[in-house]
Amino acid sequence: MEWVLMYSGRPSSSRPINRNAESSTSIAEKERKQAEDFINDNLDVPLEELAAQNKELQRLKIIEYHKMKARKCPTLDEQPRGPDGRIIFSEEYIDFMLYRDLQPLVDLRILKHTEIIIQERIRERDAAKKGNLLDCVQEPTTSPTTCPKA
Image (cartoon, rainbow, N blue to C red; front, side):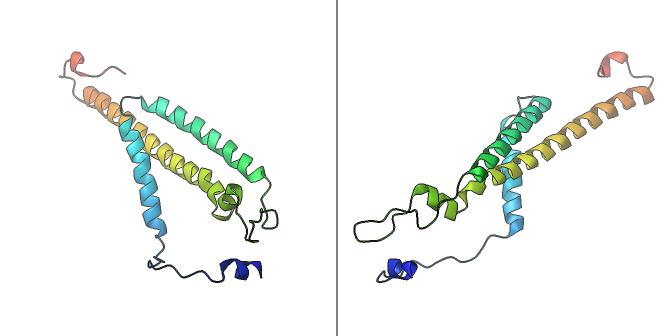
């Protein structure tokens, strides 16, 4: 009943409401692109160091998520009332209602994409190094100075 009283007499919004939800594939593509952009922005940092930083960030996000989950969820009855009897929503309640406490999980998903991309690039780099060494072994006429050192 409180909800009815709270919203009674309010005019409907004049702007059209976009009810088209984003597809899960477009969200995943955005997250993967965000992860690739992060790696491309840090090309000067060795991949192993990026992987270690990523692991640490994942650990911190997991801790942040568990702290947010452990918090007491606010209830509608606990919200303060204005002079006219309407509910004044606290920032904590709004965050809870809009699932903002799930943001660390989104960040973790992006960090997981980052980890996968870093691992792929390390594998590609190691395969390229191994391929160069195999070329040197297969071509005995090549001078040893042109072969990369292992």
